[in-house]
Length: 342
View 1 (cartoon, rainbow, N blue to C red):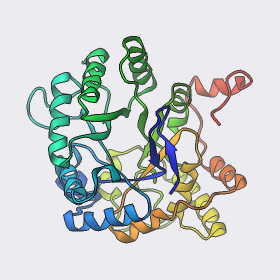
View 2: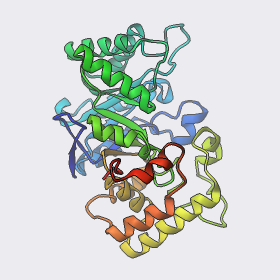
View 3: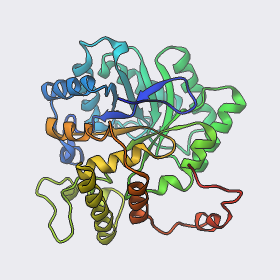
């Protein structure tokens, strides 16, 4: 397994990490993802660790906390320093007025609860799940600073921030001497390349590593969705398509056609090619893979240990390219002094 530095920190993480969104299956949304119990979670963790995938990502809202609980049970017999635990908080996780956001009250509460559910005394990477515009960034950052000083959190990051959210926070951290975010857990795939417009250049400039969620485009690049064929009966898109990023069918089919051509050339699967493409992108530190079962996990693990050729990458780039929003399309005419990320 390839290990990469997480942003500008000295911390290294595996190129692939394992996401626990399928653990628990509580509620309609997460039930569509999967319902992995403790016994199956232990088996999946064993396979991951054997393959060098020692980073496990979760969040307090995944199945109402059940995902953290199951992950904690699955890891409890392993030496704590042999695995990397990543979790997130800030979305609503309770009925109380303060059970939401990134206030000092909620973040301390969320971390304490996560530690209990995960059966650990520290979190390697703690990320804000979304931006809280109602809480001053100084309050957020000072709280995270205290959690780091207390030894409950090692590194901090964000998820689902826009460029100005992230830059405002980084500037405040620099100004007050608080720990800087080193990770941006971001949506990125061959059918979701918005990350490249603003967040990728920002991350290169400011030293953040991308931890990629939904690398198969909200389930559209599994290899089971093809032109002229109905959705597979097991696809979670039946229940969650309207909850994720909207995409035109023709665009998805165009990208899948290109993926299938490259998959045939490389003797790999469509998901393996899609994941390998991501692993070659600038700023990407780790790609979060998920799996309902052992077969899916083993297939996703086959995304490493080989490399797409420059020509294959170019063809996938061209097939997945979309018109850019302003000012990004305008900036393409000024690459002499405003170069694209490489």
